[in-house]
Length: 449
Image 1 (spheres, rainbow, N blue to C red):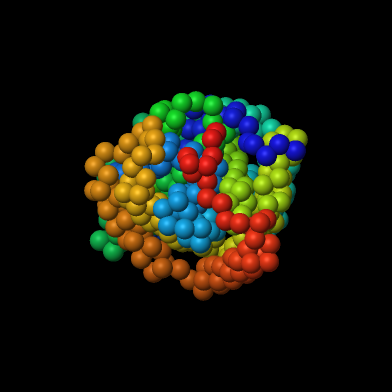
Image 2 (cartoon, helix red, strand yellow; image 1 turned 90 degrees about the vertical axis):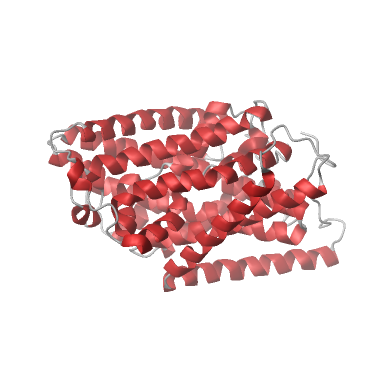
């Protein structure tokens, strides 16, 4: 079996993977946004996009400089050490794993529009979807990427057209959107911290870049393009539904956009939204699954986890890593409580906050430590960009901790206990099998792609 990932992803497919990772089941999640801060969630998303722009440019420089499948794990390993890289890698795995139940349960919820399901049935269907996708991700990535490309761009068009239909309907009123800040400054502040979740996905580019076949100078197009697509879809969706129905109605509705279409007497549109919404979630599932398996693949190459996780099948896919992702995804799916959106939001934002914090710190440190490394793209105003990103990450972590409930703490506790045992095993193997487990940190000094 080959040990090298195939370079088969185009720029369009990379954008589809990244933006597809961010644009998930918004018609299911939107009620949580309104619970947090009402229509001002639109302003929260805009503010998050602007605040995350420096981090996005930092990611562009780091990805172009260190274009390896391990992504942020490798960056932290180079800036600090193998141990910090291990921690970041484990948080990356958590980030992508926790996002997948959001997708699969979201698909199940949309299906329940057509055929009502209780929460246990939703979980069963979500586990079935995970099982089908386990087979798909073990095939050649170029086929999956082509399907993802078509589904994402098609979904983008449908979602924008739907929002325009809502906004230009006779029932839409600007006055319906008021009050913009029903929960006041506290609600807006919480929304600003937790709605960063909706931009998690641009970082998939860093993990998938080793499989790209375009110039690293074009990576910035992938990062900026995915964030703009995401804000456009979510922003118009908020305006579209908030101008027709009340905030109380949104908070009590299981799946918002199709129900709004029914109010307008457009059941055909509701069906289109449900079908395309499910397809959107499938594109999200693909991106996060691939990112999770590549995270483990990169960690295996650095001898942070068993080397078997770097084994590739005949289609060039890390099949052992995919199996691990499948088992862990089932765990998070089964553990999800009925308030699953809140549960997944807080876990994902917490993991992302830790990762982005280390990325920002690694960026500043590598600027000083390795100024000679080639940087196809160089982030402007590096010190300011790094400090701004660090402060925002700390703020998001604070909001995340405030929002966590008992179920979330239990799930995280179990996850990090398992992580601690794996870390201890790796350190043990380093002492008993030093040649096989000798730490290796990938960098331009020892790896040529």
